[in-house]
Image (cartoon, rainbow, N blue to C red; front, side):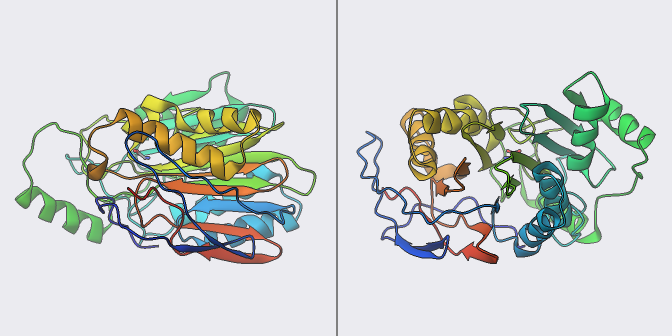
Length: 334
Ligand code: GLY
C-alpha cells in the first residue's frame, strides 16, 4: 500500500464506486452550509463481511480467511491489520511507519469487540504489532489504555519482541523532511494513512480494529484518534461499527465513529451516517482544504458505507467471497 497524499484539494465531478458487487455513482453534493443530496446505498449485503480503509487486499483477505477458519471477528481483524503492520514498505502503520519529529516511530492502535470491550495502546515504540498488544490490554489487564514505555514493557512481558521500527527508507524520508521543514510545534499535515478494519462473522458478531503510526513527523507525544474509543473506532454489536482514517484531531473533536454508530441507531444507512459525520467536520472547520478524513461503516445486516472529505480515499471490502477495492469513492464535492 502506498502512502497517499492527504493534502489533496477537493476535486469536482462524480466518481464511480464498486461496492458489494454493485456499481454505484456518488451524487452527494455538499457545501459549508451542509446543503446535501444523499443517495441511499443499495445493498445486497451478506455475511460475513470485512471492510478496511485503503487498498489493502492482502489484509482483508487475511481477515476473511481467518473468519473462514473459524476465528472470531476480533481475531480476524487483528490478523488482517497485522498484515499491514508487518509490511515494512508501508509507511503508515507498524514497522516502516514514518517517525515523529525526533525520529521515533510511535504507534497507536485499538480493538473493540462485540461485548463492548475495548483495549488500546498509545505512543508505543519498538513493537510492530500494536493491535495485538491492544487485544492483550483488553483481555489480560484491568485497564483499557496503556501508553508509552508502560505499554512497551507490558508488550514485552506478553512475549512481543522489541525491534527497530524505523526502516532505512523512513529514516531517509525523515532526514529529507528535516532539511526542508520548519521545526516548530504546529499540527503536521503531511501524508497520512491509517488502517481501520471492521468484520462481521457469519453469526453477525461485529468487531473492529484501528492501527496507525499517526501523523508523519508529529510532535513527540502527539496521539491522534486511532486508539481512542468513539473517535478512531466504535462497535455496537446491536447496531454496527465505524472506523476512521485521516487527521485525527478533527475526528477526535467530532467523536466521529461513535457519531456514525449513533446515526445508524437512529435509522441511517452506513453510507448516510458516514456522510453526515463528514458534514459535521465540514460545518465546524474553516480549513478543510488542508486535511483529509475518511470513514467506513458497517451495519448489523452487513451493509457498508464510506465517505471522505476529499477525493482519493479508497476502501477494500471482502464479501460474497471476493475482494473489492473501491477505487475512488464517495467524497464531499464542494
Ligand atoms: N488518524 C490517525 C491519526 O491522526 O493519528
